[in-house]
Image (cartoon, rainbow, N blue to C red):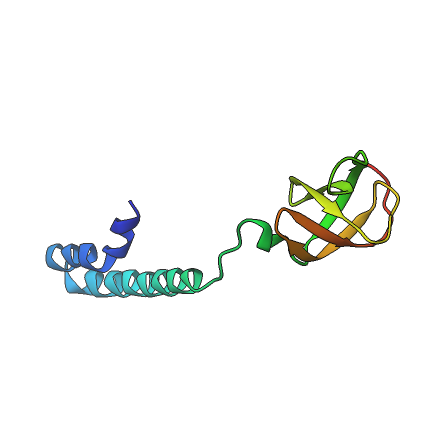
Length: 120
């Protein structure tokens, strides 16, 4: 289906052959402008950096859900963008607060203390 969108100008040529030019030329101009906009949006989206995995967490807001038991490497269970992660923090904040994630380390993320919010 997506490849058919790339062929819109070619498919639109059939309208030029079948209908009178007074209708076909404005119709084909609209198809060509829509195609140009579509190609521009595709090229723009292909240049965007990939935002998956742990690197996408840098600078996002996270909510501390609970403190983990002392045996765990990380100190807290946090939710960021609907996903659960473990995090460590130099300053021990109370549970149920919001914070930003300034830096991410492999298999863990550090958190910066933020404003305290009430649990939902």
